[in-house]
Length: 377
Ligand code: ADP
Ligand code: MG
Image (cartoon, rainbow, N blue to C red):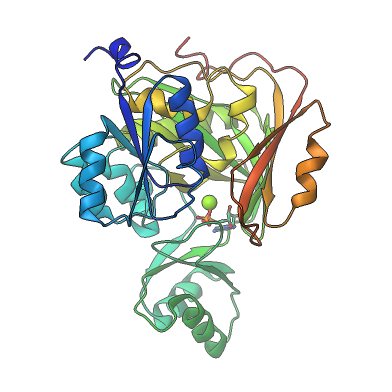
């Protein structure tokens, strides 16, 4: 089917996962006239509030997966902590983008680091660990403070613990126990990066291999959770270009279709180290909703549905702040601000640390487009 007939044919986009990323995918798809179906285990999932249909079941429920494969013309996912065999099952029955490879690589920190390094993408020093003694040996070989992360299932700083270079055996055993809860665990020990700043870059790739990159952004984390994203990032054009090139190279190596984010550390001597890949639109790309010609969610839907990519050019400077947990006061404070664009995710329960929404403050006019943002124009 040619892509333009998708736009008027009742084409259905299926989304696995019901969080805010899914919600913003649903909004973008709906604006383009697509029907949407969300599969997720939560009753009142933020994404399901706007979708045409909610398949309310676990990610491994075969009946639900079958319904999704039957109903949707193209399926995507909005989180990486998914059972791989379920997504594989879907991919054998429906068109899936991004493909299974991107999920396989990005949902396991060890596979991800191996993949990055084997594609000449540098990371901090790391070691796979399946016991306390593995961690002790890795720590001794790094000789510096490190961070221990569960290989599978961590997000927003969950499933990780700092480990100082001179930690005692007893403390190390306690740290391991705190992450493993007495079960077998595979984890990765990473040498702490003494970074100048954290950056990220969102890129998109379509089914014909055409790519586009958004401007590189600077991220500030608090308690390992993204707090603020600033664009422009205030780094040299050379660093920005290298970051965009690195992300595009990764997308190509994954044969990626959709929007992908690369998180990076910039060291004092100008080295870029990859931290992690997100095979989906990313929190640090939310500013694109208000500051770019085509935002990251529409870009993702375009790629998944086989439409040509839009322009990722930015037309204004922006600062995005997450609204976390119980920061209810922040919500009303932004309403009278003409420069603020408030986005709430429709979550009724304000739990500490939970991502409830974000606000983007728009400032000034943007510079000329970078080489990559103008590629599809
Ligand atoms: P998550 O999946 O929770 O986002 P990350 O690996 O991105 O996990 O870690 C969250 C944050 O913790 C990072 O953005 C960074 O601020 C800090 N961090 C993680 N790993 C390192 C490291 N090796 N060196 C320094 N800081 C790190
Ligand atoms: Mg991260």
